[in-house]
Length: 243
Image 1 (cartoon, helix red, strand yellow):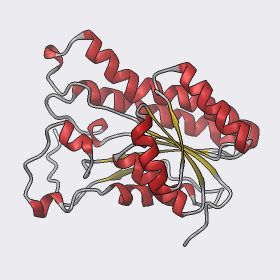
Image 2 (cartoon, rainbow, N blue to C red):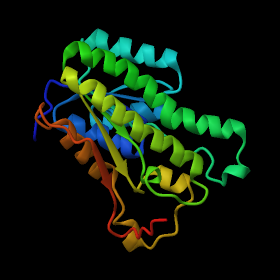
Image 3 (cartoon, rainbow, N blue to C red):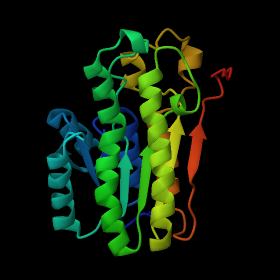
Image 4 (tube, rainbow, N blue to C red):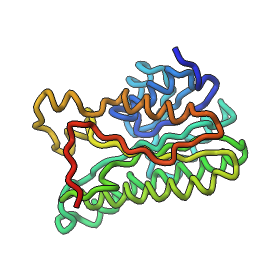
């Protein structure tokens, strides 16, 4: 086992399934002490037992939940080395004209505002420590345009820009910010967004949660003087026709 993250404390949001669970598993396998957060306590407990993490129920759109999460982590670990803002949701995949104001607000809150809340708290702690890594998980919707994905894409594009700002703000303090930008994967999000119907051969070659987890773990395990600012991850089976 590669223990290059041994002694590090990590928090992963949206970790009750999918990419978040895969990221938590790979960080734990590399030796990190991992806290996982999501809204479903039952799902969190299942994943925590599987990957060897500590669960805490939290809604990333709630400032109070972020305060409670950070208080718990810092009380036990006294530091935070890694924050992975992975929580996200499509909310309503439809043309903008067919969405409600509440659906638009909810999509932006869970995909962008929640990550900003977590990043604010993590950045303050990492400036004090003079170290740490924030990884924001965006989406290729941030760099391409498809019908019905406009609001989600706007939120995820905002997350890319938020990460760029964090990068320049944290760099003088010895801390890092990275944006990982994956395409579709073998997760519940794929099914919730009704992106099913691929042949088994194609579906088998989409991004697996543990594969993205290894990428995130590698980014976090880089020597402290190096940083990957952004990384786009495509499955080769995906044909992209840019606008």
